Amino acid sequence: MTRAVLTLNAGSSSLKVSLFPENGETPLATGLADRIGPEGVLKLKDASGTPIETTGDLTNHAGAMAAVIDGFRAHFSDLDLVAIGHRVVHGGADRDAPATVTDDLLADLERLSPFAPLHQPHNLAGIRAAMAAFPGVPQVTCFDTAFHRNQPFVNDTFALPREMYAEGVRRYGFHGLSYDYIAGELARTAPQLAEGRVVVAHLGNGASMCGITNGRSISSTMGFSALDGLPMGTRCGQVDPGVLLYLMDQKGMTATEISDLLYKKSGLLGLSGLSNDMRTLEAAGTPEAMQAIDYFVFRCQRELGAMAAALSGIDAVVFCGGIGENSRLIRARICERLDWMGIEIDHARNAANERVISSDIARTTVMVIPTNEELVIARAARAAVGLQEAAE
Image (cartoon, rainbow, N blue to C red; front, side):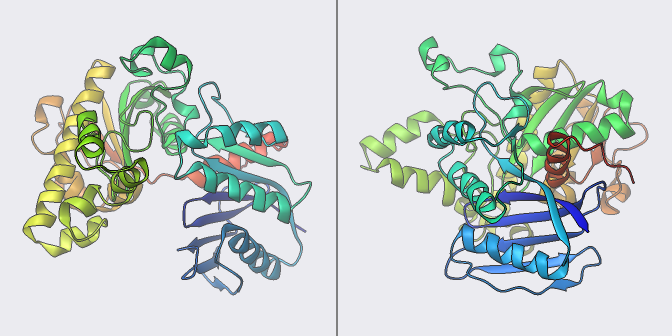
C-alpha cells in the first residue's frame, strides 16, 4: 500500500502537484499541468525522473486534476491518499496557520476572492476538484498570507481611514509558504543567522522580499495585493495610485482593463516589449531588455534597503525563487553598490551557485537556498491528520 500525501498548487492556468510518502520528505512523483485550456499540457514524472504517462481533458482544472490522478493511480496501483494539501493565496486578516477544509471555510475563502481575483478562484477550484476526486480524504489549506499576519501595525496598514482597515484593506503580504520554508531551513542549518535580521528575496515570475527576525515576518514588499512592491514577470510592482486615476479619468479604462494591464502586460514584459522571462532578457541584449533588467535590479536594491531599515539593520540576505536561485547575473548586480550594508559577494562562489556566496570578509551573509513550498504544504497536511513529522 502506497500511503501518500498529495500537494496541489493551482494557478490561473496551471496545476503543480507533488506526491509525498506518508513519512518522507522526498516526493514519490511530481507534475505540472500548464496552459490549462485548449492548449493544455501535462507532464508527470516519478522520483527517478521517469515520465508517467497519462491523458485527459486539460481544458479546465477539474479535467487536469482527473488526468493527474489517473496517471498517479496507474503508476502507483495501490495508492492510498491520507491527506491533500492546497496552496491558497489569501487566508484573510486573522488566519495565521493552515486549516482543514469545511463548508464554512470554503464559503469564507470564496468571500475573499475580490482581494485576490486572479488567484483565489483557481485555488478554490483546485480544492473542489480534489474533493470530488477523493471524497472523505482530509483537505488542508495553507495560506500565503498566514506567515505575515503578526506584523507590526505600521507594516500592516495604509494611511487610509481606519474603517477601511477594519474592512480588510490592509497589507497582507504574500509568498508566505516560501518564506516559511526558508525561515525553517535557516533555523535548522544556521540558527545564529535565523535569530538575526534576515531579508529573503523570493525572485521569480512573482517577486517579493520579506524582512524576518526569529522566524517572524516583520515587513513585506507586497501589500494589499500581489501587485505591490518589486516588478515581476508581467506585474507592475509599486506604482503611484495617481497613475490609476489618470488611466480611469483620461484614458477611460475600465477596472477590468486596468487589471489586465497591471497583472498581465506590465513588469519585465511591459518594460522590455519582449518577454516576461529573465533568461530571455539576459540573452537578448536589446536596449529595452537591458533597461528592464536595470529597473528590476534597482527596485530590488531599493526594497532591500527598505527591509534593512524595517529590521534596524541586516545580518543576512537569502535569494530564492526561479530568478534568485538560478540567475548569477541578477544576484551579482543586486549586490553591487551595497557594500555600505556590509554586502560583498564572492564572484567565484556566485558563479558556482554555492549556498553561501558572500565573501569571507563580508559583514552580511548572502545565501542561495532553493525554496520548497510543496514540502511546507505536505508537512501541514501531515500534521493536520495527526501524522508524525517525517524523518529520512
